[in-house]
Each structure stands twice: as C-alpha cells, then as structure tokens.
Length: 86
Image (cartoon, rainbow, N blue to C red):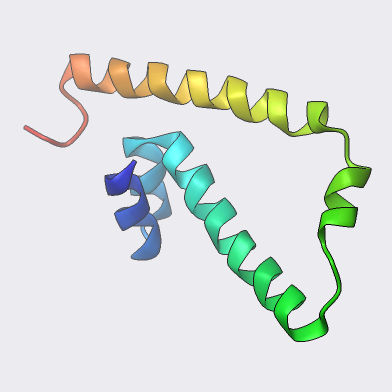
C-alpha cells in the first residue's frame, strides 16, 4: 500500500494501480477527504448528512469486494515476479 501511495502522490497513477489497486483507491479517497475537510472548515456545513443519505450497501460492499480482488492481484503479480521488485 505504501508503494502505491508513493506512486500516486508523484502522479504515476498507472504504476500505483499496478502495484496495489486498493492503495490507489485509498489514496484517491484520502485526497477527497482532504477537500471535503477543507470545505467543512471553510463553510462550517456538516457533510455527514450527505453520507447518511447514501446507503452503505452502495459503497461498502463494492469497496470490500475491490479490496479482496486487489489483494488477489497483488499475490498474483508477486508470484509471477512482475511486481517490479526483482
């Protein structure tokens, strides 16, 4: 995950996605969280109300599924020796 974050912050999104897809998604969510926190800090409006309007099954289940698939991908590229470490 840390390598994926490192590639992401340097603008190498495809490298980040290749190394660990879930790390790319988490880095993107961290960026979105920063902008949401900045919005809340500047306007003083709560954003939690918006999150309660969207049922968790619309974002939680896909994120968990993607996390499992991302780890399967990571294991696959590591076992094949195509993860960039050799």
